[in-house]
Image (cartoon, rainbow, N blue to C red; front, side, top):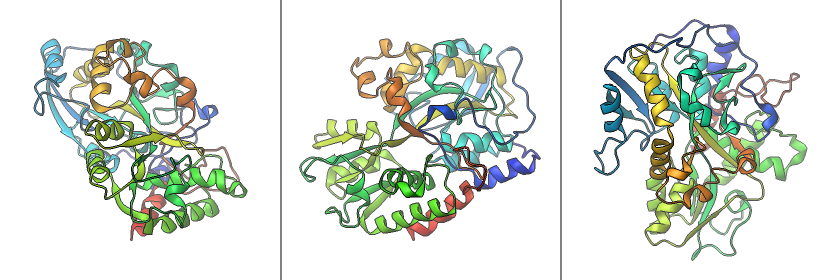
Length: 397
């Protein structure tokens, strides 16, 4: 994808880009504070181009290769004539790098990637009128700071979830109700803590400090000035000796919990489901300090040569039945309000709080940290994603 020349404000954003979110619904609609490249959304669909290159989180675009019963790509190909090539990625940073090659038409971007892609001009606004199933997407997922800018939609919400606290019930007692079990230097589980491997994890430390050191004045864990950022980094360095390993692959985390290398950690609900299903005594909770989380967005590449196929995919992947299949397989809450009725396991939407807007509002969603403080402060500059990345390298040693 061509790297677009952009304004100084957006260049700052790119340097800072990472992840961000706010647990305050007042931060919507859309990201503010920078001007993205001037790009227009597709005005009308044409004839399907016969091909589609998809960049996706593993589990989002299954074609039966891993399990013949898990296949929603083939029906799409049959319906549209768009032959799909899927490239899975393991981290948001990898997705951003791959999108810059110009080889992909659509990407499933989490909040720690989406604004970077917008600012760089690698994705363009989306014409939601051309995506009929968008009408059924939960309102609390639309026009948010990670999927829109200045009231312009840059993608279609797909699925969402929280980064919850999980533990081995046979190894951890009493049941924890606070993240202190992972952050307190005197935690009895030193060397058995497992934490998420990403610069965005700094926000988890900031969220903890928001409750435990209110004098720092943290209002948004993705909007950290020098003092607040230094405190979050110091807390993570204090945590470092407690950590057995950092994970980015939830299956590897599951294995660590199963074999006892780790007994408490940050997890996705799917990790808990998979691990418990295999016989490991595990539970999870939303601690007293709250949680960070993610909401994924399907975005269209600016230089896509297959934009009609891209829009066909966007509408298809969030249709009730397909969104249900993906959510059930991947382990997340679906974006389409009609998807829960299509799920094989009718209990999962309760497990994932899919219909619970109050629960969703409590999550501090990943959003790109930028110099313009996302909490609205104008008298200071906040640390951008580039600085978060450098600090994360230092924290891990």
